[in-house]
Image: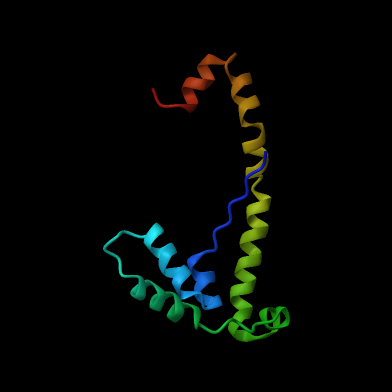
Length: 111
């Protein structure tokens, strides 16, 4: 037996123009003192922001975005070079092996 329950989000209902459905979902999700019209007005106002039209070419050629793109790429590269993922992957094995060296474990952890 399979059950499938689908609820549309409040934002999706407002975009579709189903204001009655949006009000009923607001009553289910928000506190009873919250006014549904205020919530729907906020959703409509926040969704009117224009989407970005920046292309990948703009990220690397436009001076406005070039520095931010360079910093983001450097952060990604340096993050990968640290080896943090390998340390997290093998940390349990390293600590198991360190149990045989009791004196070293106390040197690494506070007493």
